[in-house]
Length: 226
Figure 1: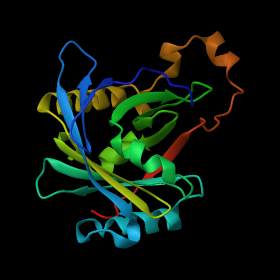
Figure 2 (figure 1 turned 120 degrees about the horizontal axis):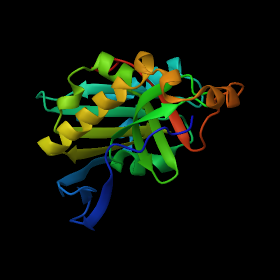
Figure 3 (figure 1 turned 90 degrees about the horizontal axis):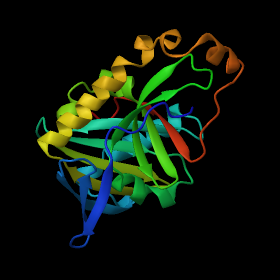
């Protein structure tokens, strides 16, 4: 589906800190620093006990999803402010697990090609590779997710696991959450295409069908691993 709006949060890599740690600043008038740290890179078969439950997400993806689909789940940390976002990718994406785990979670809206539907999606973007997560499903299963100030992103493919910790300021948490709410307000059942597009515009694309976007892995959401 073509993108209907620009991403809510833009970030720029500012500098490389000590090994495994990177600093980012948000592209806005308020330069808020966010740090990330690689917690683990290795084989799923030798995963430390702290991440042993991650294999459940991989097994669930293999059982529930098609060969080109991913599965996303969330696990609450020891406090309300910490979550781990687990992204089980299809096989054959081993080279993408590190950059996608380091990607910064964003939210945007996507229109169908015939303009009859608009979806709110969470996005992890790393170069030409991207993960799209159904926004409504994520909030339906995990309503407290948007208030986290620590988000660990765990990506898996071909039994390779990467876990990266993202530390967000309260300002950035509120910014991402408000962006999500704004996206929800104009998508799904709230989307009224004939209030936005003219009759000629709708007729011009009426016969178009949706096609997968190159490089995008579409992920379903499941409550496994909570």
